Image (cartoon, rainbow, N blue to C red; front, side, top):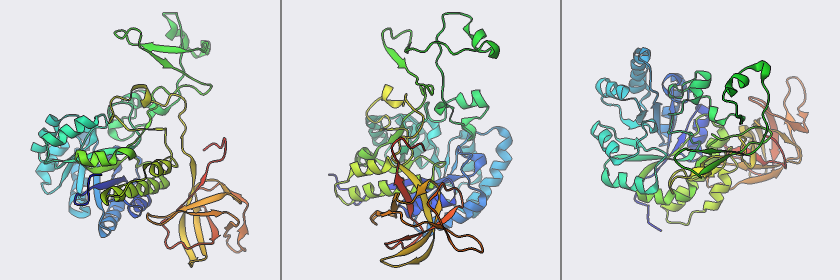
Length: 453
């Protein structure tokens, strides 16, 4: 095993809001990335300027870096607002770097805010060393390489352009096209992915039709004459690849021909370290607090084991990562074009093994033998469910069979509950037979047979 102790590697986690940012930090992130809605590709990630003014010093106090994503391709009318927001971010918020994609915005930033460090966004689809070298000459200090690279290509880029930092996505959702280049969302719902409002149209259900009528669209687009055509097995054949048939299947729910599997490179971390990657990026600013905690915890343990020259438990990491919402995993393009293995054709629902039950909101009392805690419930739980309590690594997972659950009601004694569905700000109290030292603790339970999420 190659010794990595003297090298610096960064686990870079997404932060869609303040709470997710805190959990990512406390569960092991070396850095987080976030943005403001008007200029980030995750318009739903709820970070305001005031949020950023809070989370940046919070992270810095804990030795964690913060990068702000300003990576849309804007229309001209956003220019004045861009200058206004950048002035606040550079002079007041003071992140460690900005993640940018648009050449115009990069040029303006270099001219107006020369002190700002710029990282090149994955939206630039950097696939070769010539492009990396070009951006290095423009003053870019780090590039987020395209997901579509093989391991061999990644090694070559670092070898030919060694003096630029490499950031690479190791986990999370994959775009069905080159990152951000899909037009489905814009075409179907007028929501432009490069303006930060992608509606994930690639995850929708689609029906497949077969017709020998050259005017079939006239029939299908007429609601009065609409009918479901006969089901069967259908294939796509590209005209220059005779005999290479790609099956398109559907069940009673429809088909998911665009539904890309998720990225998971847990078993390739050491190879990527050796290849020259310095920042290991996780996708998912719109995903749950549980996702932020578990993914950070899993990769933190892998990183620490590799850096300390211990054998990493990759199977445990993948098992833990599978407890989060996912569409099935693949190692990106590292091993070559995954072809049919890149898509999940059978379902659009998650493959996860566990349900996020909630997180500790308040510790009422705590000792080594007993803790009374207030939990914000985010998922279904009932008496006799076996709950798992996960805290930041290296603390072990605590397991408890739920035998008490109460809800505080104004003016009444605590009401005993048998089950609860949960929701935002829905708090219940547990008394558990072990110590919980702080509120950075998430609860989960295993999904039951045939249980729907």
